[in-house]
Length: 280
Image (cartoon, rainbow, N blue to C red; front, side, top):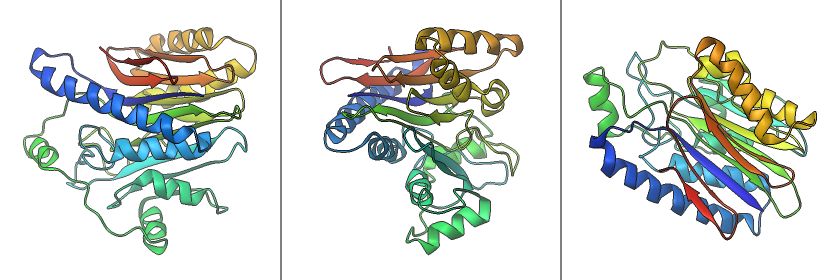
C-alpha cells in the first residue's frame, strides 16, 4: 500500500515560514490519516477521502479557502478516476458546495459523469449537497486588493491499495481572478488520470498542464513500459518548450512513488506505512 498527496505550489519567501510549517504539519497529518483509511478501504475510496480532508483545510486552495474569480464568485473543479474500471467523473466550475470531490464521487454512478457550471451545482443540490460558502476572509481580502496568494494551488491524491488497485483524485479552487468560464485541468485527463499501471494527479497552471497533457502522458508512458521516473522526465522535458508550470505526483503498479515539478516548489507528502516524506 502506498499513498501520496499534494497541496499545490508554495512561495519560498522568508515571510511564509509560519505558513510553510503549518502546511507541512497538515500534510503529514492528512497523509497518515489517509493511509490508515487505506488499510480498510479501496484506493478509489481513499483518494476521495484524502482529497476531502485537503478540501476541508483552508491552508489549501480547494474546497474551503478556494480562490475568488474575477466576478467575485468562487467556482471549483474536482475529479476522480478509478484505475481498475477506467471510469472518470468530475465537476467543473461548481458553486457553493463544501466538498466538490464528493460530488465527483456521486457522478461515478451515472452516465453523464462530468458536469459543469449550473448543471454541476444543480446535480449537487438534487443529491443532498446543501449550499455552503467556501470563502474565507483571507481570499476576500486578496480579491479586494487584487492580489494572489502563495502560489498556484490544487490538491490531489494517488493511492495504491492492498489489492494492487490504483486511483487518483484532484480538486482545485482555481487560480484566482480568472475570467468567468475558465476551465482548469483538474477535471480533465491532463490533470488527473489513472489505470491499472499508474495514477497521476497534477497541480500548477491548468493551461500549461492541458497543453502538455501531463497526467495522461505519464500514465500512458508507464503503460508502454517506461519506468515511472523516465515517464515523468520525458513529459516534463516536453513542458520546457513553452516553460510550462506544473507539478505532478504518481504511483505505479509496483508501488514506486514519484513526484516532479517544473518550478519550485510543489507541496507534497507521502507515506508507505513506515517512512514519511514532506516537502522542505
